[in-house]
Picture 1 (cartoon, rainbow, N blue to C red):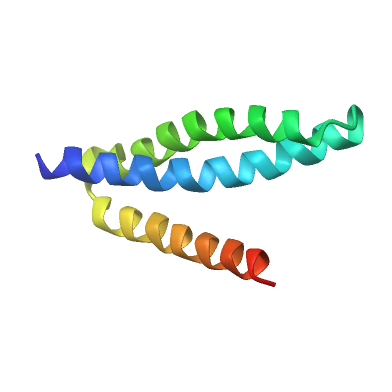
Picture 2: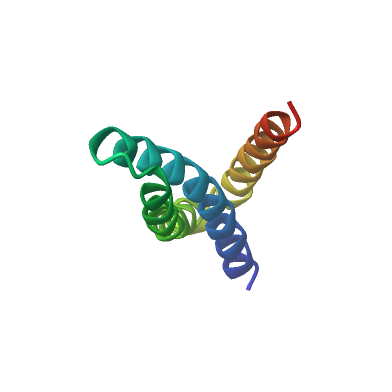
Length: 92
């Protein structure tokens, strides 16, 4: 049961990171090609959610969850760093 909880937490952490990174990347690519950064951000965020959810869950549950705690901690430290960076940019 705890492995499923760790898988869920890892998937959510990966989704948060994936949404931010893919949205920024998609916005940049769409802005360079078509000049439509908002559309690229929306598409990138959607792709990033599913890629991060799958990637985070896979990273936690691989090797039968042997390193699940470490991976979940690593992902959520990444989420905290990402939130800190976004807050710094928003309040600057």
